[in-house]
Image (cartoon, rainbow, N blue to C red; front, side, top):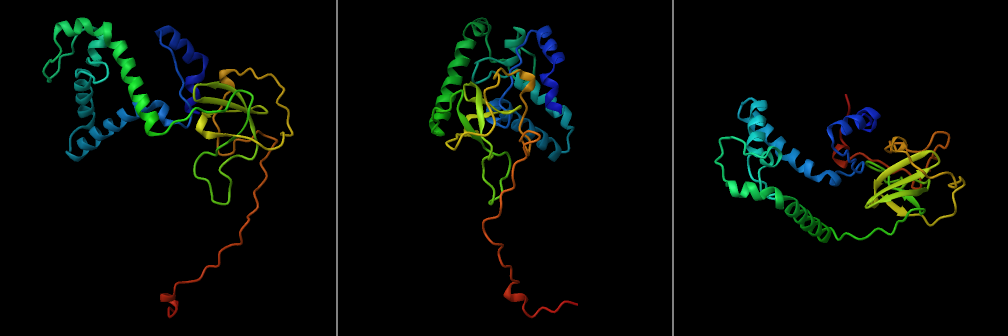
Length: 248
């Protein structure tokens, strides 16, 4: 229930008061928040090094963050603290940013940041052989199950869903009154017969009604039928090295 705290009206009022835009990422898709995930990996490394050297991990984390904020970033070209406060931050590291660079930094940082992100996106798309999704609003799709799927179970839910919203690679589907939001790679087009339920209801979605899929994401009252086991159980035999073993 912790993630629902960021979807309430109080948090929206807090965001409007401070003047920032709350952007929700795709559930169950860590790549959507990759920059934070990579930084957490570095932060955990600092924590483990402090524990291994028998130092106060809180002080080591504070020291690392202070030096990180005073170091020029490879993407923006300037220290994060300088971009935020408009002046350099005093630290034990030498100041390598000249006053002229600080003056011209804010005028070109947005263009450089956008160019770097586009370059990284093109590299990652080419490495992963990214393709444009053919799924469109109104299509019937099957949703891939979350977590580990047993071998005797299909990787996709048996009940088809209807696509009601698509924004980039983020797709929201609907089945009765249940909504699922996932990355487009978690869906595949459904080519079976028409579902028994109706999808002619109003497709307007309120943000508070979109929920994450749980282990059993089917709506209440429509339980998913159990999948019968197709193969007979395997015959288990003890190893031959235990043939002379006599229990006490």
